[in-house]
Image (cartoon, rainbow, N blue to C red; front, side, top):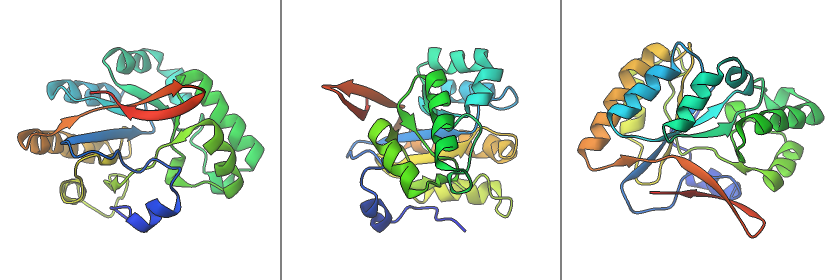
Amino acid sequence: MYLVKTPKLVQTLMPHFVWHIPTREKILYLTFDDGPIPEVTPWVLDTLTNYNAKATFFCVGENATRHPDIFRRLLAEGHTAGNHTYNHLNGWDTDITTYLHNVRHCARLVKSNLFRPPYGRLKPQQRAFLERHYKIVMWDVLSGDFDPEITAEQCLCNVLENAGPGSIIVLHDSLKTVDKLRHVLPALLRYFSERGYRFEALRSEEKAGEKKVRCRV
């Protein structure tokens, strides 16, 4: 069970999380979880280039270590990286110390204070610590590309019907989602580009000892 569109109430209850970027401009923020992997991520990068689109990749540290050339490529092409733990850990199933060490391990690798918990799951103690050291980026539109019960077209409709200015959209550059992604990504890029949208990456900035997330356009 998951919600395609994150309700405003949920966003209000967790105000320290980044759910969307407030803007009236036609800007969307594509995010990709779980990569990088050679079977999917290079194709994603090629497709983004075709539309002059930038995105944020929440990398599993283990994958970035195994495929450093792909990781370096996504940064070189103007995309940004975020932390998705080193081993794709479920916060609910992992003790606090192990989880936080795993996050720190990935942070040293990707050199980013942007963090997204796998499955969106954190224990209160994990969240309390991470909020002090990272910007936790969630989403307001979940494509559902990971869901084996829906088709690629349904996944696409989830995005087209729910995304708007400032939306943070979740996709996955993984083997489980690649068949859907090959349909969904070009179609949503074409659809929103034709309607005047542009696609930007989330970027972290540090000023006066404070870590912030901003969009640079």
